[in-house]
Amino acid sequence: MAQVQRMSRLMVKTLRDDPADAETLNHKLLVRAGYVRRNAAGIWTWLPLGKKVLDNITRVIREEMDAIGAQEVLLPALLPKEPYEASARWDEYGDQLFRLKDRKGGEYLLGPTHEEIFTLVVKDQVTSYKDLPVMLYQIQTKYRDEARPRAGVLRGREFQMKDSYSFDTTDEGLAESYRLHREAYQKIFARLGLDHRIVSAVSGAMGGSASEEFLAPAPAGEDTFADCPNCDYAANTEAVTFPLKPVEGAEHPAVEELDTPDTPTIETLAEHLGVPASATLKNLLVKVDGEIVAVGVPGDREVDLGKLGEHLAPAVVELVTAEDFTGRADLVRGYVGPQGLEKVRYLADPRVAPGTSWITGANKEGKHARNVVAGRDFEVDQYLDVVVVEEGDPCPKCGTGLKLDRAIEIGHIFQLGRKYADTFQLDVLGQNGKPVRVTMGSYGIGVSRAVAALAEQTADEQGLCWPKEIAPADVHVVAAGKALQTELALEVAETLGAAGVRVLVDDRAGVSPGVKFTDAELIGVPKILVAGRRAGDRVLELKDRRTGEREELTVDEAIARLS
Ligand code: ATP
Ligand code: MG
Ligand code: MG
Ligand code: MG
Image 1 (cartoon, protein in one colour):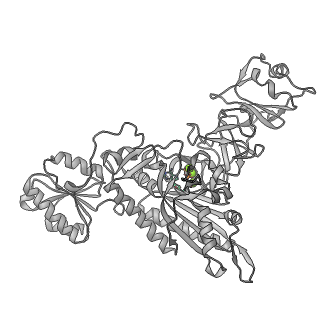
Image 2 (image 1 turned 90 degrees about the horizontal axis):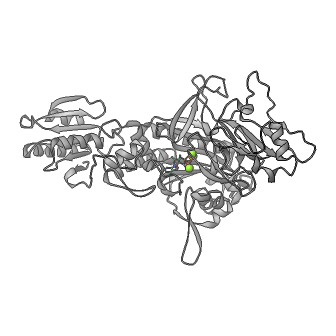
Image 3 (image 1 turned 45 degrees about the horizontal axis):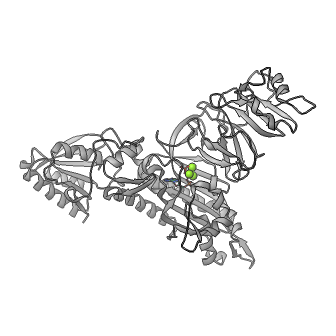
């Protein structure tokens, strides 16, 4: 006996107009159809319909995690500062971390992800190699003070994540736990009806070695991935690194040292460049003693020669133009630091000194922009030259022109290795009686983000359009008329419900059939069954929400078809 939900008793208020601040399809539709409601930037209430969808996603994830032998736990979201200090993430997470104090002045955070705490739990619970491998997961609320909480529940500051962690004694064991998760994720996203790609990714704030992302292609996505039409290469553009390419046929003195035996001055510099000493220049990068002191990026910023004075005292000055680097205007530089590869498109402050704040941006629109601090987030002298990956750039594996697409990151799996185990000395007793250091993996799925991603991929002009397994109901029965239609609609709804079909029935009095039809399309249940004109003959109309196909069926036929 499945639940029959009457619309007359359901707390749902549909809206005809898009919310003023909504930029993306999922944001507009989930608000208009009454699934979610915004409380503050990036903070959302899940209303009854939305909660059903969220629960359906959670159920699928839980089933597939249980199937690979992962055990469900629930850790706190309110966490003490010390473990995150030990891993250095108290600082590394920067402004993304919600930090708070208790009444005694003790410092806490709201967990953005839980590697530290899981490591400590396992250290406490597991003593012998015989107890491993262990895989643990939770479905829990996470907190990140995102710089741009936009796109509805796609990027929340409070959001639901499924995070799991594996613990093994050997590298082979870790590879196996990783493989199990990877396969479970493929099953989960297939069951959710999410079109997705697995791509190589950078490990970012998690640390560790190998990582892959599950991306759901959608124009609203904030990630761009490169896909090779010829071989199996697919990577987030953040993870595509090209070596610098000399410009075909051009002289390529990529780095030119200014030949001044004495301390260079603005005048010698200007003379060398053949410009007045007061000039501002684009396409110019100035290094002093190997450190970048100024960058002029075409379209973005200029180097003001007059302001370089204080940098020119020490010694060697290198001048490099953007064209010399790449033959392209959009030079970026990528830095390898503790957080992995960081791309730098333009610099807020051109001086690279420890403590200097930089703005990094992953793409031309400046998406993912965030503050990083030189010396804290990456080593100043550890930089790679990379270029913005463009459509048609050669695949690093086979040379074929790459295709670029936008996508939503719905999952991310990491082979962490021993990073956290080293921090917290997570050892177990080995076969030979000696302690063995544990190796770990961590695996995330954006549960609330998956709702947004599904909405993005499946909605049409009329509204949401859920895959069956995820929809808040299997059938939306509409009473389009007066008492006769309402009676028939409720009768059919009860019969379907008794047969285990999840039914939403629009029995609202005083609401016109037109409004009910519009709402049914907006809410997006896969099948719409209408008791209308021919209710007297016990004939109903069945409409497929996705294809729009309609057919007339008797009550018995409809029940047989839908149950
Ligand atoms: P993004 O690049 O979108 O900021 P992330 O790489 O920081 O995500 P992870 O640390 O890899 O995220 O977290 C695991 C998963 O949690 C992500 O793959 C994503 O699906 C989800 N997620 C991360 N941040 C958010 C958020 N602010 N709102 C909703 N889901 C999120
Ligand atoms: Mg993030
Ligand atoms: Mg990411
Ligand atoms: Mg990620």
